[in-house]
Image 1 (tube, rainbow, N blue to C red):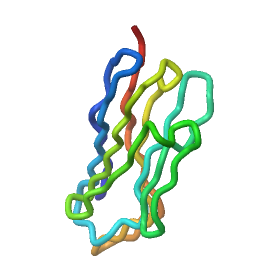
Image 2 (image 1 turned 90 degrees about the vertical axis):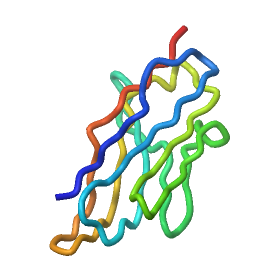
Image 3 (image 1 turned 135 degrees about the vertical axis):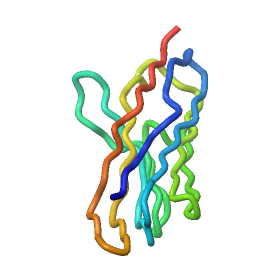
Image 4 (image 1 turned 180 degrees about the horizontal axis):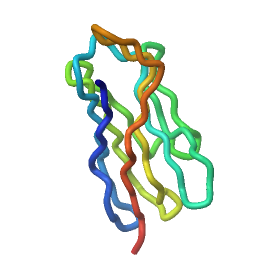
Length: 120
């Protein structure tokens, strides 16, 4: 069974940085796309960034401040967040799409989420 496990969230002051990690566990042949979404209190979940065969995509409000990268050998995706603002406070969720394993094909998977709080 494949699972996504996030780490790296926490409390940071405005202007600070955090690096989030998400590792896909299990016997995996390939993952087409990995990415990050976030959900702030009282708001809908929104795309932060994603990376796949077609390249990378960023939400406009995060382009230039956040950088997504991926280590395919480790089935891990990273999100470097810089110049954090209080409005970046949210639960950040890892997402993976089109995951192929020896026994099963997954359409998509979500991690459990990691909380990022930006506050002075």
